[in-house]
Length: 181
Image 1 (tube, rainbow, N blue to C red):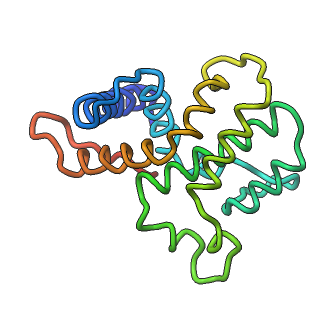
Image 2: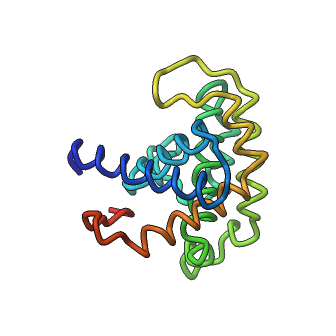
């Protein structure tokens, strides 16, 4: 995807988030909606959805694997994996809840027994407790991560509403293939 296209996608999601959270849900929280817009833009690409890798470089596809990897890491690296688990679980719970049972294929998986909401809340909370060196735009503040932990269900609901809005479409807006490629 080209950078100018990402700018269009970012604008699209920012507008949808603002419309959905402020107008429909009555939640006027620019910091939260900006974070969620950025999450949606990052997760447009599969390699970002499955960006956590084990020591051998293999992408981890299950939350249980990501959590085991987080326990092997320290400091900001551990924070990053827990933040990703929060983002991953929020994305699937909010945007595509119907696919949660399909994420793991037909094989029996430890994730089948995992409560994505509870694990997402826990992971955001853990990430919020680990100090981060300000590394620019990819760094989330402890405050927003802690709020995502407390407001996980609200955010998941808002993301479902955002999906409904983009599926409903807008005759004046250019067609958007928002996710995933």
